[in-house]
Image (cartoon, rainbow, N blue to C red):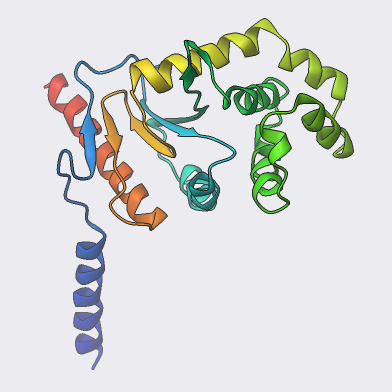
Length: 220
């Protein structure tokens, strides 16, 4: 009886693993960048998530992404980039939300407040947090955040430079047409093939493994 139970368990495990396996197909579930774009984490595999606080898909994706990030192996470096798409050569309407993100980052508050911003925009209908610095400042003040420090960060050269860099990455470097978008090692962009966040992240995992194998092959 024990042997039968063990055999059934092995069969079920094989079925589950087979269902979770992702077959990478270019132009179907991933796209390549040729030549690869420069990355910041040269000694590790860089994974970038492009997002916008006003994007409902990004909001829905965030819980699964948050859990996934916590389990990343040591050879993977993850970072978020708030997407900014230009309008007439200048940062468009997504720029203020990018400034909000980078200001929180400068204040070491992204871990604490990133999810709260998403929740406020989508659950509390606070669309003003996407574009109105005064509304952002008041909202943060009610959470006990130093509003003077936030204002200084928001207007700083560093934040303005990062927003400009986000625009360059979103538009010129990666030629994105929407978010969320995940780029692996400056080489591959994952393409969603379903509405399931888990499926999308499984594709990202497969791309990470692809890069890992490609790097290993180069060392031989």
